[in-house]
Length: 352
Image 1 (tube, rainbow, N blue to C red):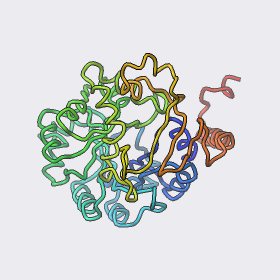
Image 2: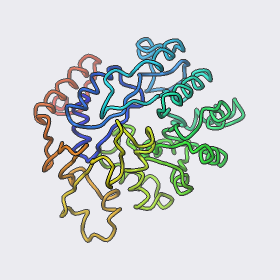
Image 3: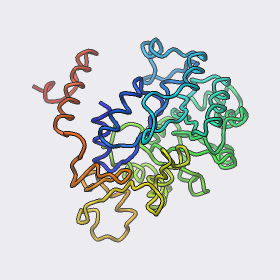
């Protein structure tokens, strides 16, 4: 599954993937990423020690596999992440969204600082949980983490769908970094969320734009989703391009993996380069290059990809793996999973 996902990311012109701490087999995932040629940043799985009502994300079966235990988390925080090294880096990921005690937050932040790594977490994913926390504690979850001494320039928070003015001020003062997931932000709006990360970026904050999961858009169309989600209040095409390249890289380990500087096209930086077909419809009449590379770009426009100077996609075809074989194995694995969980699905087999 990881190898097929990596292939789809590569063909969409994405050169690096960040795991938020939800992979059980990081060693297998690292091997799959290396096979395709993609960079990756992995973390220990499910660093949490408290329960939280997260329908669709947390279940009894999951808690039995990865118990919410401080002792378990302490062991994971200090141990190497299996499979990492070279183009596969690591970070400290607390699952977040009210699943970590104050003690775990403090200890994870201390480990991240000691190791010189990014501490990342999901936060304000569901505005209803954020509002309940604020009512119970008398402050926002951002203000609470600040009071714990957790926030800093090595901290990256994903989602942040319910920021108030004080939160923005804290994030700016602490130089904390943020990941904007536009598709998720659109869903959060239905529950009172208001994503203000474009505003944070305009204030000078480091904001990367990312895809949490492709549940309502295709891989590689995040620029379009970002523009539609933010509307007139969103970032300029030039700012959005930065969010998808250098600013995104800076949200993890300050933009370096294995000593390589990412997100820049200049002497001394890693040779991670995406070449697009020059005559696609998004290039006509070529009035705004940054819009063409973000809002109008489609995965089909990716021609060649180099990672660390190696050509891993040539003329739209992966150079390191057999695409047809990988796709066939991925379909077989999906069908086997559906059968195990009793899911009929909608597709050729179901329709027939």
